Amino acid sequence: MEPGFKKYIPFKQIELKNREWPSKVITKAPIWCSVDLRDGNQALVDPMNMKEKLEYFKVLCDLGFKEIEVGFPSASQTEYDICRELIEGNHIPDDVWIQVLVQARPHLIKKTFEAIRGAKNVIIHFYNSTSTVQRKVVFRMDKPGIVNIAVEGAKLIRQLTEEQCEPGQNIRFEYSPESFSGTETDFAIEICEAVLDQLGATKENPVVLNLPNTVEMCTANTFADQVEYFIKNIKGRERAIISVHPHNDRGTGVACAELALLAGADRIEGTLFGNGERTGNLDIVTTGLNMYTQGVDPQLDFSNLPKLRDMFERCTKMHIGERHPYSGELVFTAFSGSHQDAINKGLQFAEESHAKYWEIPYLPIDPADVGRQYEPIIRINSQSGKGGAAFILHHKFGFIVPKEMQAEIGTIVKDKCDELGREIKDEELYELFDKNYISVEQKYKLIKHRFVEHSDEGENKVEFTGIISCDGRQYNVESVGNGPIDAFFNAIKKLEIANYKFVSYHEHALATGSDSKAVAYITLEDNVTGEKIFGVGIENNINFASVKGVLCAINRAVKN
Ligand code: KIV
Ligand code: ZN
Image (cartoon, rainbow, N blue to C red; front, side, top):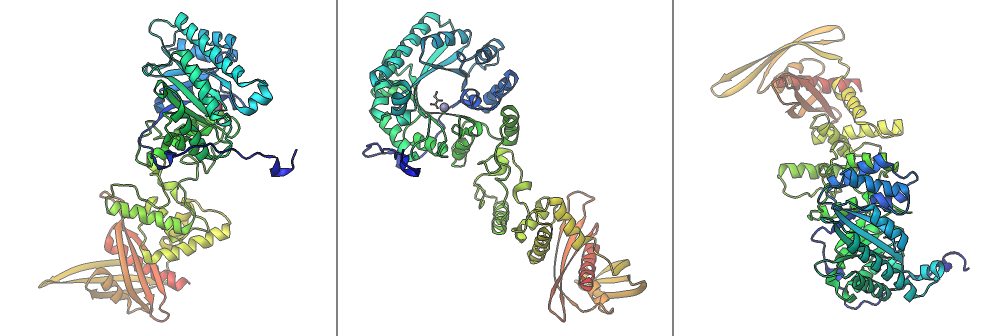
């Protein structure tokens, strides 16, 4: 064998003139078929037990799946029993079709018919391998031999359906040329046409032709070419529902499914979160939500992904990666400062402009649409900027910190992260904010105070009187100003702490309701150094909150 990469044969492109799929768009949901309980289950270290499969089946029905492959009932007693329990235990809603997989082999087909007794809606899915490599190394059979397996299987299935189909029972057929993408497309067409003929497929009773990308071997555009070529060349396309069944060996299962839809496929088989053999099956959650974010209703309900993920992880004992599209723990989290800032601004803009459409930088989907919350969107580590801390303080704790203060808070947070060498939690952020701006050591303390408002011929004046303590001494202060802050500021000018200029003031209520508190953010400037000093005051009364804010700023300044 050749060494290294030289031992691999590049995939041969297929001849498709005037391909149409590149200029198409996805405008509607396909028919979805979940193969979680078969392809997904067979790939688990510990396959699901009866209880888990029943729970999983119910969840699939609740999500909106109308076609669910429940197993391979002729393969083992366990698989047979689950099929029987679903039917006999009345677990299958009237509008749901169960699908059962079987190889095109007579004894297995017969056993499958026993397994589906009493089921209202059944898709019998049979398959045989058709790829060049399987024909060469596994079956050592020529093309007519392979066609014969499929046709004989189809013949027996049709015969057993005619003999055994019960009144009120609906049976449909699905055929898969397994490893379709590794099969010469003309040969796949030939075998599928023979199967359609044998099953008596018509426009009124179409047969599902499922084209598995059993092992991904080429780029998604080539798979799309294969599908478009197949659809354009098969005789009697109208008597078939074209389905695709991508796997994910090259990590492009979703791309293959999407391009196959552009190429004309009607139906998609896959699993939740892409569980399945090797690198998995197509991830239906990602594919569906990709449609959702393009304004297309996927017809599946993914509004509570955390709950779905819990069920999935519990039943399959698999883990969904932190970066898994839409469902991973970290996918709505921005660590980078500039991203945090942009998200923050985007959300603010959307709120202010009553936006009709979702246009938030770095968030392709509204986390709320999949049952996620805003809280974990932004997490704080040493990469984060001022926007992240401001976002958490606002959305989690209700503090709308003014822009001019954000940079200082950002630096305090960054330093703390560097010191700890890790991300800080929201509560730790609040503690930092509290320590630095609220529970500040009070060298100067307001012991007593009174504001009196005067209005004289339209001119408003506020008179402030109070006692301020400093290092065990008390000072009586009083003055008048055109507002409470001005009055207080004039009053303290008489103390030796008068080295500051008032710069700006912001305030808002901290919570709604009659007992809500007010918060005031004060910016002062040191008369000598020009340095900005910030303070925060929280009180029931907004005048008092601002006075506390001014004192807080001064106390912070004298401490430094
Ligand atoms: O991946 C595959 O080819 C399959 C078939 C049995 C449909 O799972
Ligand atoms: Zn498969």
